[in-house]
Structures are given as C-alpha cells and as structure tokens.
Length: 488
Image 1 (cartoon, rainbow, N blue to C red):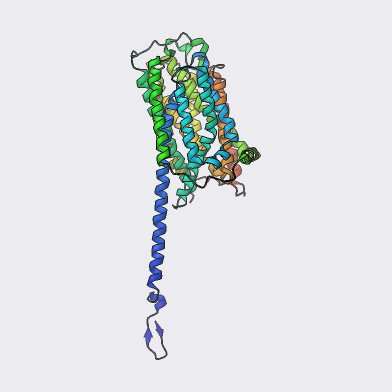
Image 2 (cartoon, rainbow, N blue to C red):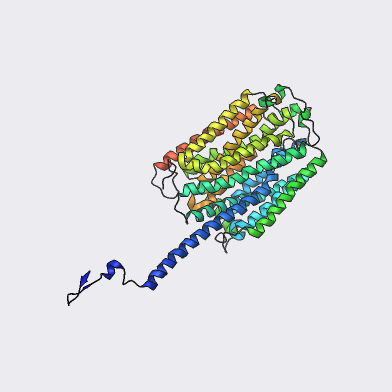
C-alpha cells in the first residue's frame, strides 16, 4: 500500500498488477500462445515430412535392396551381378565428391530425391532381362545420381531434425539420433518386405528342400568358380524374374508420385548463383576436410560400413544361405536381417541417450566380431536352420547401428560444412562398397572376413582416439559428443 498526501492508503498497483494495461497483457498472452502454436505446427510439419520421405524411400528401395541381395545368385552368370554393383558404387564415389553441392543448390533436395527415385526404378527395370549393356548403363546412371541423391537425403533428414530440435527443449544429439533412427527403421524394413516378396515369388514351384551341398563347398571355404555345378545356386526362371522386378518397379513408381505430391521442399537449400564454382568449392572443401585429424580418424570406420553391408548381401547370402539351402531361401532368411535391423533402428536413439554413442558403436563392433567367429567355425547346413537366422539378425542389428550413428556422427562433428562432411562420408563408404564387389570373385570368404575384421579394428581404434581428442579439445567448430546419454 502507498500513502497519499491526505493520509489515505491506496492499493499498490505495481504490486497487485491493477494498473497494468489489460490490452497489453492480452497481447503478450496472444503472442506467447501464437509462438506455442507455431512451434507445435513446425514440429508436426517436421514429423510429416520425415514420414513422407521415409515411406517413399521404403517403397523405392524395397526392390533395390532385395535385388542387391540376389545379384550373386540371380545374376551370377558371367559375374554380371557383382560387376554391375561395382559400377554403381565406383560412379557413386565420384558423383558424391563432385556433384552434390552444385545439384542441391541448383535444384534443391526434393528435386534430387525425385530424380534419384526414377534412377532407382531404371536400375530395377534393368534386372528384367540379363543383358550386360543394359545393366551396366543402368548401374552407371544410378551411381551418377546416387551421390547427389544420398547427400540430399542426409541433408534433408539433418535439416528436419535441426528444425524439430529448435522447437523443443531436448538434446540435439538425441534428436539427431532419433530422426536417423526412424529413417533407419524404414530403411531396414525394406529388407523385410523386399525379401518376403522375393521369397514367395522365387519359392513358387520349388520343393521344400533342395539338394544339400557338401559342407566343404559352402561357408568359409566358398569360392564361386568351384560351385558352378551346385544346383542350389541355379538362378530363377524368366517368369519369376519378370514378376519379381515388375512388382518392385510398380512400388518405385508409386513412391515417385507420392514424393512429388506430398513432400515439402526445404526452401533454404537453393542458391541463385550456384554453378561450376560450387563443384570446385565442394571438391576443395572435401579435400580440406581431409586435413582435419577428426576426419582422417573416421576414414577407416567409414570404409568399414561400406564393406560390411555388401559382405552380407553378397557373401553370406551366396556362400552360406544359397549354397547350402537354395537361392529361394535368401529372401526368407534375410527377412530376419530386416526385422532385427528395423527394431534396432527404433531402439538406437534411446540407447544413445542413456548409454552414450560410443557404447552403442562398441556394441555393434562386438556383434560383428562374434558373427565373424561363427562364420569361421560353422559349416552351413539346413539341418541347423536356426543359425542362418541368428547370423542374419545380429548382422542386421549391427548394420542399423553403423549407418544411423556414423551418419549422425558426421552431422554432429562437422556442422559448419555439412555438405563437405557428408561428401566425405559417402565417398569413403562407397569406396568400401566398390572394393567389396571388386574382389568378390577373387577371394574365399575366409580372406574377406579377415579384411573386414582389420578395417573394423582400425576403424574403432580411430573413432575412440578421435573422441578422446575431441573431449580434451577447446575447439568449437564441431559439436562434441557427450559421454553420458542426456547431458542437456
């Protein structure tokens, strides 16, 4: 209360708020409410775009990855399967190094995602007939588009996650891991449905069991040229080939239409003056990134994630599943790969939050080493069917962790130049893919496992050294990865 000159006590309007302008108060409340509603709408848009993008990827790559798993068996004649895969990834290497920045700035992420979907459809269609020229042309086109496509894909998820985090009080590392984890769920789900489709199409007319091969022909001692007479490795009929690729092609074209109709463009990814200078800038930035010790330490691990995927898709499917149990069981077993990978994709975000990213990556490394030991010791036989599914499931969980977390790691560690960082990520991972398919027909599985383990050991060592250096560094041009889960 305040006292007037006449001694009367008046209420203290500054304390009780009675003298505040009600119009001003109402405006403040409206502004706060508008901000909350706008933030909520932004979050919904981020979730919607993430969902649409993930569904389109799922529809497109269900066929692509299912057919990739069958290249060593369905397209084994003349080595056309593994050579076509090698062409995809050698062209992807160079397109990821030169083209992404210019194409993203010129056309935007949405346009590149649409073009990449069409290129994938062309690759799927090329599998209808076993023609060397057609498959190599389709593979080269897919590779040239793949570099800008996958950079646009990663940038779209990264930017969507960043926008979502700006409207919510949560750790960026957790949000980034969760968004990439959701995408990996759809990515791994392609292995489930694509391989289910391939199993039902290719098993039509097959007897319950195919002739069993002698254990010495399959497994760790497998060599393609020594198994040409193995009936389990006979390719599918022309009718089955046409039906399978026709289903996958229809799914890809549907994805293209959905993407055009419902996916929102980022709008901040276009630049008017983009051109050849962007190519030079991208190349210079990528090579400058190699001067960064953190980038150099990540190269072996990035190569490894390019090697481990083809090792399952080409070697495990051919040397263990098809060789001893028949080509039509490749899809059946690989469903387990997809299911376990999809489940791990949903769990990886919370795992990173509560036990740290380093612990999650160590878990993936231990899982891969364990399976490599099993592959050395086990002689594959349909009498022990459970082991096929254990190998596929554990490898699928590891694959989901590697791709989601290494991709998120690049976005977190190099936020000031994400295009150059992602170019390096995909250049080195595509190099791993290319190397794996290049020596596929020249080494036994035992040699390939040893190569894989060497890259895994060196890669994890480099990653941990980099994290130790990062924690003791005072630099601020990248986001440190905290030890514990939730550091916010």
